[in-house]
Image (cartoon, rainbow, N blue to C red; front, side, top):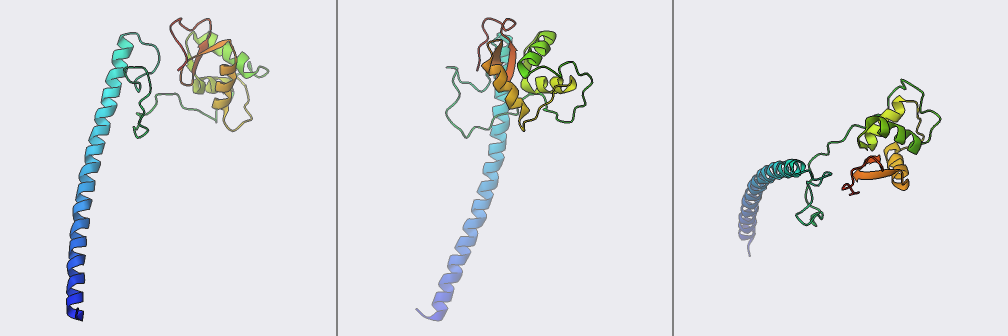
Length: 174
């Protein structure tokens, strides 16, 4: 092949590659738009499932479960944002009444006062407000582990605990 023919072939190949790149970019943009639309529909559907289950009196957040009660197998599903309290670290104690208690003792007092299950983030924030100090890097995990190990508490939803005698009979850990 002569130099002109080689150059001509290379230019033709370049034009084809550029056209393919343009087509792929357009298709990727279309696919991304469709993914966002599907994600929105998915979250709306999950919210509808949660509202329906709540209306039926089903305990706990099971919106992500299938009809058989199990988690879906696909790990590619993007879950909707969790509705849980914010874990705060800069709370100044308003009282020191829990200062000399351990985590399970403090949690028992707070849960009894609340008369309802509480997320570990809520418990953590209230413990800080009442003078309990945490030394570890992950206090919410420490609280969850402490409460999980005690028979005094029952896990009623992910990260959410109640006093065992206050938890409703049908509520189980998830």
